Image (cartoon, rainbow, N blue to C red; front, side, top):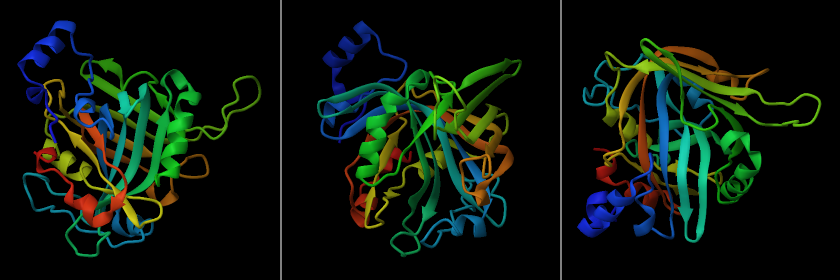
Length: 306
């Protein structure tokens, strides 16, 4: 698979430079016209949740991540916990075959390092929640993708994002402080009466001065196949950070996960996780078709982990 600007060639590169590149360009669609591709500007955090709580949500054993690997976990990981991957961001130029959507907001709560094959070594994602929202809270933009995703094996819920036109908002300047928020839209009443939009999670973060993790930590955790709803098939969403506009920034901040009665996530995840580590960046995402889980695991590209 060819996926970088370098592979476009000099003529194509000069043409792109002549017209200028958008902030987050989809450089994968040309070489993968029949697969789902997008540029995803997002922030990812790892929340340490007690192992027993995480296991209660997942019908497969958990794999202990390589916490002793200093390239992935330089400061280790809180004992007795398992990482939960939480993301919020904006997708630009979403394409598949002749279909194209300019912009969608997207986020998810996933359990990584799940032993779907029960071999003790091959990690998978188990989805707790997947969220999509239209730009500027246009729920209609999100309707078709949520329906298609659910039919193909990934339950997707419509959400309201703040900010609703970018991956995160600058809320203070000295030092720069950022925030992002995701709410599950159950009922949005645009005319009269109450809406039902419980909060799912939010981030409040800074650029890390002493990072808990490395960029490779997030890439390794992110690039694992996802177990689909029927648990018979899996799907790899591959994320590449090799473009010059990726602009990765390691983060430190607070992650709040909201459970019932007022929140949208399972109660065992609910809590405020203080001074956690994460990454903000722009990633090229390539979504493969659903397939057998062994095949999906074999598709993981080593270049996506670098």
